[in-house]
Image 1 (cartoon, helix red, strand yellow):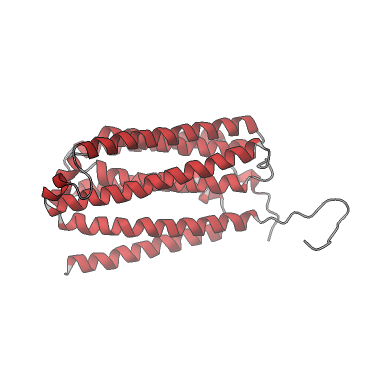
Image 2: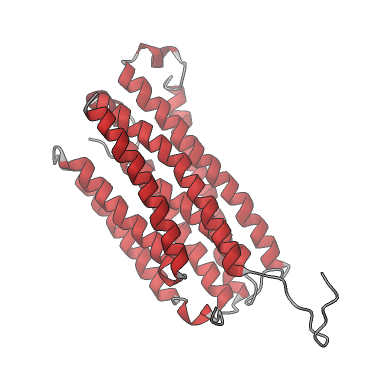
Length: 207
Length: 96
């Protein structure tokens, strides 16, 4: 802010490496948050192996696989959006970010149908049907709702963040030379994908 | 610090595309394998594939491969923190 003038060009106060480092540190706290839940999952699965298997049979592997493909593809489109702006191709970047948002919404729509099917079968925490189940199955569904629910919350936050970045991109606030914001939003989105990569086999693929 | 013209390190569109194809291939493998009963190894195989997939995402999509060393140190540190938490807790579960 000091009146430090070098000719007419204003000195830009920016530290892209620092910004990215801050984002990574935040992502590590997220990893620990989910890590704690995976630990609880591991502990209870070890204690109730058969009940976890029986309960997991109820989950729809088809929807789970579809959502995996959707999230992986949305990770690709975010990566492409960043690569495009780095090459100065704003149109492609905007397009890719829009596609990412469409995929994110598709993920949430699938999640909605998946959860509402479970709830209509009476499978939700505290329901009568649920309380009649053995302990291991109650724990499985509890973890299923909390972990995929927290993940879905991250998807929603990701949609908000990416929408903000899309507006910034269209307003030319994010440019070829200044795109660290978009990169950090991309990192967040990849983390959401990363967590799903582990949630998917642990909940949907137990046989 | 050297001048940060890191632009040269950015992979092209095709790299991302191939990584995506690999991720889809691993997904179809893990879904197929889940149908086959491997007994004890089912979980191990599923987690192994998940680990490979996350390595691809972290290295290429999240650019860790192309970042400065300090990012890799951070990543290793948080990975080992998580690993230690898991190992110590597993001792408690096994010898309880």
